[in-house]
Image (cartoon, rainbow, N blue to C red; front, side, top):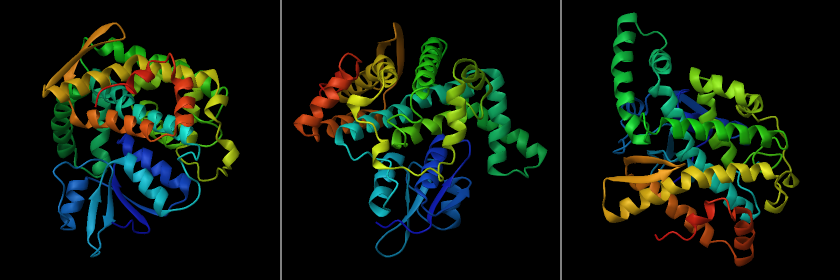
Length: 348
């Protein structure tokens, strides 16, 4: 499989993962061609067989015969881009720090997206805003009647999907409290460092930016909360959109032992909410159960089980097992007491 130059991807401004990858390509100064639109429709135009599930963004790779092949999972794509393009890496050379970056990226991709989807579709004002805006990302020239029809159908579908992220009246306070704690932790952290792990961004920064590009830049309720609790995060989100002018050096990474206490606040939030969700989901998947339940932040949480999140836990564990003994001890020292350490001993 080959990555063509310029890199070609299909996505939407309303997709946090599209924004994650677009910001990363800008920072790494990798030439790209951004196609705004529906990947399924675009693949159909090109007579490219679409996978069973199509996600935003969809990258177009080339197989050995030169045919286009769709690729969608942002985390492995980042690692493939690391292999294909040198310089300005977003994966720290320090194995222990790279593990922490991997954990932060996974948290942003899989838990912070609950904030994004919940706030976008749970509240009437936000759902009306998103339902009106997102169709224009597909075609800004939509006739008014088509626009209204698209809004109604799309909004109904998305509101119906809230259950997939576990958003409902019972879990809404848990999601809201977690979002607010993370904002306070980020406010403290960005007072110390411009990025999560030092003075240059890692993959975790771009994953977090993707979610906050929507939370701060699109949806009314989370935007107001962010402006109230963490103007540093609001500012950071604006800056992270395009870091192509940043000139990083290796010393810009901070060793795990040198990270400020504010990073530990973020890890504590991961251990408090994301870890119990991951563990409960994995137990359900292993048992062949369709739903999982757990107590998260003192409240009962129930949602559909997803094999992908079980894989996420397995991948985190594999990254941890791949560390040498000395680096594993360094990770253990940083994670001790955060709740994140509970992932490392979970059965697979």
